[in-house]
Amino acid sequence: MEVKITTICRTDKINKKNEAPIALKVSKNYQTKKKSLGININIDYWDFENGVLKNNAPNKEYIQLVIDSTIQELNKKILNYQIQNQEFTLDDLLDNPKKKSKTITIKDYFNQITIQLKEANKLSSASKYKFCLSSLSKYHSMDIPFTDIDLKFLIDFEVFLRKEGLANNSIATKFSTLKAAYNSALKQKFFSCEESPFTNYQVGKLWTNTQKRAIQKEDIYRIKELDLSNICKYPSPYLEFSRDIFLFSYFTAGINFIDIATLKYHDIDNSHIYYSRHKTQKNMKATLLPDALVILKKYMKEEATKDDYIFPILDKQIHITKQQQYNRILKARRKINKNLKIIGKELNINIQITTYVARHTFATVLKRSGVNIGIISESLGHSDLKTTQIYLDSFENSEIDAAMKNLL
Image (cartoon, rainbow, N blue to C red; front, side):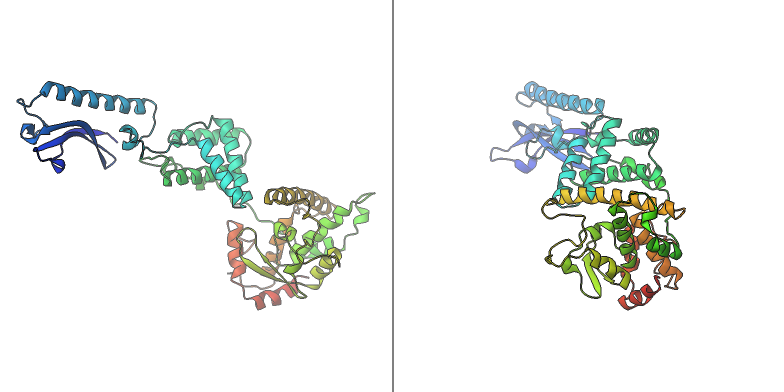
């Protein structure tokens, strides 16, 4: 928006000598600031109708020179901002050191958010910002302000990501992260804009509804009964462990792998497991069916304390920090999914088996067993896991317990 500069005589500050300061009134984006010129004049020498000095004003030439040179300097700064396509506030323009807007580069802001998320133990979200910044930096130097992001920037960034071979949902994740950072920085007034570039660039168009995968109830039985010694000459003990984790998730209401990894002895009793779901911090309760209990007892140790982890994924002596735990869980899940792929191939299951397939199969089997379709929709027909948790929360515990009897 155009900056408007006018000269005023401040009658709100008339002194005992009937003098008032001359100032510049600067307006931009419906905001107004005043810049004092350090000159007082008797109000009788000011033409209030036209906003100028009267011809008979003392030292008129000098005062007019100060007015003109100050306006010229401000116009020069405005032009410089416009040439650099750089957003600015009135405090920037008027050099107000106390209120001058904070400037921050995209790179610095992303790094700041990443640190904050890590400190809050939101490591998955921190990784999203880290990888988004990595992609942005490959596309363009991020030592630039957010005001450099315009519609062309977004379109070109999408083209770049597609050339890099990223799928729609991966691109959408990066754009959602960038948009969240942009809006957050804008809210904190690190910059200002008349219209967000995301107004004309819809991130939602990038999302592709991925087909949720579930295996048949009969496949669960086949996995459970498979003789692992027939798969390879020297079967790894981790192959059996991978199967146990998959089945345990299925038999305990589709518990996520990260929650299995952090499950401790104090989280269980003879009939249920209790835990706070990592993704949503929701308190969860799952019935311990006989098959789940068999798996649980296989890994429980008599000498363990209540604060020990049940499954051999995390080690309290090694994985101390949240970051160490997070890295270990990612590594373990990759290895387990690799082994589950081997099992699926052995059984000719045409769906790639992962730890998440156990969660999805649990819900699908319940639906096919007659559980209200309004609570568990076909193939978990929601857009994300948070929605999945919403429908699980809506169950009565007794209904879950009764329905889970149909898992085998």
